[in-house]
Image 1: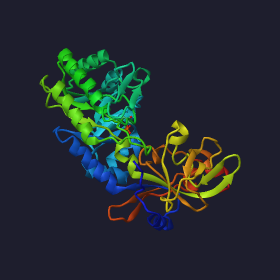
Image 2: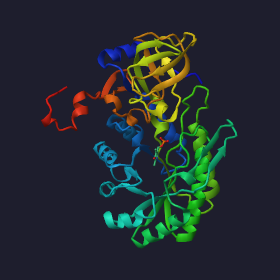
Image 3: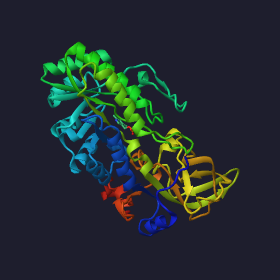
Length: 425
Ligand SMILES: *Cc1c(COP(=O)(O)O)cnc(C)c1O
């Protein structure tokens, strides 16, 4: 499907007069409509709840939008917990799905009344010692082996390697954890698993659901534990490439419903609530990195140098990820130039695109890098002294709001003790 920016060139120019490039911009309308579709798709399940994976886009203005749409927050660190608390999330609005968890983080999650999602059997004695055992506890499952799914509709394969992943417990450990937690006074349980990331297949969630639903029946039969929640976590992906299929959340919701009716209802477990911890699916398509061409360069290849770099969006450099690029105002021009689109880090992998066919690009052209709304700004870093960009919200009425200012050199220098030095920014 052709990818269309949610911003026109003249809208972008208006914003740039106010907020210089580069910046990430988020589309409030798109985010809200997508939330509502998700809740409609799972409305067959009475207790359905999405816990937005805060790590995808940790900005309080976006968390507040998620909260207004009925979402909770999925956290994995102290900072994410504190930000979620500041946004008004507490108690059952917070899922704490952490791993390698420090004591103070676990204590904070407990104090907030969050659902604790234990990554390991050793977290049972850990919470006994650190904070105590709450009435409801989640445990994270790892089935091991290889997870493979060939999707009939698209021919797209989903493959991941749980046997190689650091997360979760074995089935025997799950049973042991439930038994011990019940002895400690826990009354109800949730189970969670995350088997594959960025799936563009309507079948992934249902396949995961059937694994977890069957596990829930076995664990109930084996331990007598009352399982009330099944957390399908994240992993529903987005079509970063124009030629990729788009996930249909209504098909996904319905396929999960079929597994629910096939496995849980006959086992007398039809009152289980389904939870999700989607991150990418909730925000990726509704964010973009807006950046200007600083320089063009023609040597053995043709290069376009931007004022953004991998420090603003590290996915291409880190995973070789594809992000579609539109040159604003040149949407209808032929893509007849082959470019490497780069940032200015002293690293040759600082490339947003390699051998990408685009219209002719000149200095000052505005480039719109698509689908940066999740794991974009949030993975930013300061290598080469590059400062983090601003974040902007495109409101539903078309106005824009600065929701995080750009970093300054003072921010960058703030962690040094300057008393022995005389320079200042
Ligand atoms: C990253 C993560 C998510 C969100 O994953 P997406 O692929 O962005 O949907 C959810 N739960 C946990 C525990 C995660 O680590």
